[in-house]
Length: 173
Image (cartoon, rainbow, N blue to C red; front, side, top):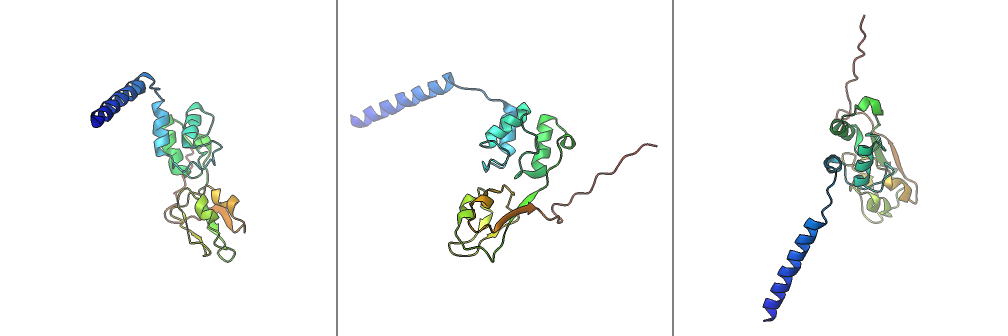
């Protein structure tokens, strides 16, 4: 009898939640959903917004430039530009950033490791830490938490993966 009572109660509560979900459904902007789905998702706040959803909403409304997401870099800005119909040249291109750790000063406190939302810093307690450059997005969250000030974020060096051919200057004579 008790099992039937719990099963009936579960079915009624499930039905009630299903009806409430349909009744109180709030439709969102599909472009905001698309932009949020391609953003890094680290909720780093480097754009000045609390998270990637708020940043996507601000980009759609025109509050933020499409280049205002440092972790996403120029590839993300180009994708967002396609979705919004905005040219990347109109917004100004941002430089890709990369964190680095002065390993001679690192005490292994793990604060930078814990602050990195992308798991781009590796190391152990009381051991030297280092940055995995292929994963680092340059969000700068690790800089402010380091008590030894041994973490810095600089413009990423140009290599075969980040180099782009410069656009030609078209002049008509």
